[in-house]
Length: 429
Image 1 (cartoon, rainbow, N blue to C red):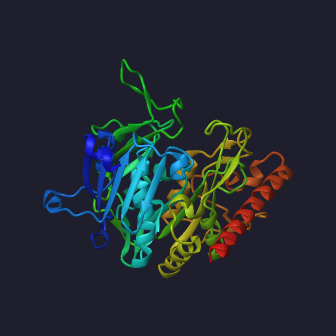
Image 2: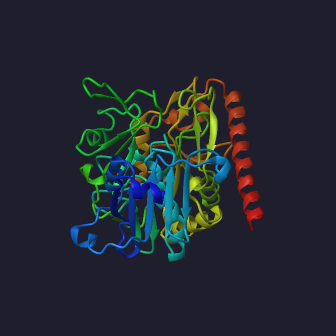
């Protein structure tokens, strides 16, 4: 990689990670591709002219797609490598043009550095009400609605992907957004759609007409993982400081393709740990090659590839902060109701938005609940603007015995996954 940089033109961006000045990490990004350099400019926090003078990086990222590993020589599984050396504070990326590796490598580093400073690193989006007091966090894997639900025009966006929770509140790690664009519509996601059309926004893996240059956001020709990378200030109501108070509500999002999890449930302390460590969603047919029926995806703490410390350490940090600041924790199913994928229907985005609105406005406090018979989750009996029959997943199935079988099957998958996490932790210990 040193030889490549010495013999080719490369691009350098000096940027910051962490909106909280006390936690700020100075990052130098060296790239082979000009658009990767623009990606770093869009996604990280941009220093002003004074801050760029005498800039000395705390971490360096070198991304050179043309440099490929030799698996037999280097001990890698393929020609692609993403190597993070925490001691030398350097990241090297090769054999891949996927720009997301640039930002995720620094997120990995922050998952190691920040807990030692008493900061909980989180793979979540965050927004706040117009008054600035009711902060909400949204944890969720790709395709669960994390970016869409946090970009609510009635609230202000703090950030769409990575945050820290310190003793003074939360702060964004980034200065930009990395939104999925597959099937995006101007009517349902106006703020994100407008950002995709703005000058300087990067569209990654998006197919477009070479004559008209109009993007086809419905095309999965390259991948379903189509993206737009843009500065957060393209969202009209963004919080430009990237900071907020301690959250009132923490929301876990799961797109349950089995169709058995409730649209909303309030979690107790044991359930918080269980579902945070699970980090559940599901792949469905048509979104991944070779997938013909629902397939569970468990990503520990909603961030498995980026965790450096034992998962229980992050779960402990979440529960300690939730208890200290009296935050409510909820689980929302943005997936299927009335049956599994292929039988039931996808949860209405309008209903999901109504549930989120009720949560953040405190309208579910004092509402009576009933217990789900399989998972033991407490389901509200009433949510404004959501039909009562939608709230009980079992009641939406035409065959309740089939629901019970499917629910027990998914519960067993959760339990097996938690068992494997505990087994891995004990082995590592």
